[in-house]
Length: 277
Ligand SMILES: CCCCCCCCCCCCCC(=O)SCCNC(=O)CCNC(=O)[C@H](O)C(C)(C)COP(=O)(O)OP(=O)(O)OC[C@H]1O[C@@H](n2cnc3c(N)ncnc32)[C@H](O)[C@@H]1OP(=O)(O)O
Ligand SMILES: CCCCCCCC/C=C\CCCCCCCC(=O)OC[C@@H](O)COP(=O)(O)O
Image (cartoon, rainbow, N blue to C red):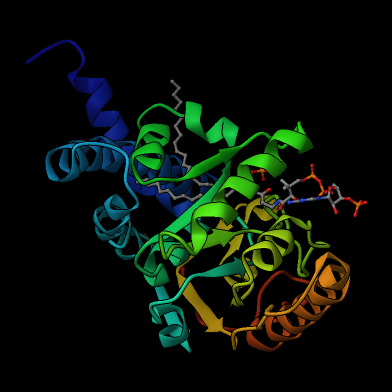
């Protein structure tokens, strides 16, 4: 018996109370998510090194297996529609809406083979999480310097067809938890037109039925994912980009509203989702 035992006992007694409280439950789940990311990244880094010896997009299939476990801890269900459109063995630019750090779970559920992602450079410095992203072939861009971000994207465009790759981009350029989509940045559309490859929009329903950081709500729930039809860019030039962007934005926005559960003023959607204890 050590002198810490009464404190450990107290903590154990308090744990159910803390988990039942909405705010502490919320923070517990977010902290646990970060712990899961770090721990799984360390293990995945070792597996990736042993399997492929360094940075390659093939490591993503290993990372996927780890991240796909996360949803069971959070009682999240993912309902997919049209996923087969992503698995055609041809290069393309995949665009999707970006709500939260939780998106990674939805991403890994549907991520096709040979698909690299574009991420903000700051994520490279998150220790093991940054390292596993690097090993998985993620391309890091400096959003504060448009010219370097653009040339990094241009390099991706140059190898996309040559290496038969797909690229996953969040065209909103940042997380957006509001019940709408932000206006799109143009990088993804330049890339698709430059490489003359189709754009495939993927829409995730609003998380707000189970996840609302401002109200400290984080319950179990369902995410609907819909893959829209590919939009061809063959024959398009830079002049066509504004219209292409607009088409993708309105199609995705329409789909987002259709598949999301609109909340009432109380912040509930009337569903029976209960906090995961
Ligand atoms: C266990 C743990 C496991 C971990 C698993 C890892 C999972 C990994 C998950 C990772 C998830 C990570 C998720 C994340 O990290 S999301 C955050 C990072 N991702 C992005 O930002 C992607 C989307 N952003 C863009 O595409 C932006 O456009 C970029 C970044 C490129 C520039 O943005 P910026 O805001 O600086 O500029 P702007 O878009 O207003 O454009 C400015 C002007 O430049 C013109 N322009 C733009 N592009 C091009 C071009 N190519 N050629 C020529 N011109 C171009 C454009 O027309 C405009 O001109 P004008 O029209 O106003 O005259
Ligand atoms: C040595 C330093 C150690 C730091 C350790 C930090 C540990 C971090 C642990 C877990 C973080 C999980 C991150 C999972 C990756 C999710 C990617 C993501 O969603 O990034 C947000 C980015 O798209 C947009 O960022 P902004 O909304 O523009 O901001």
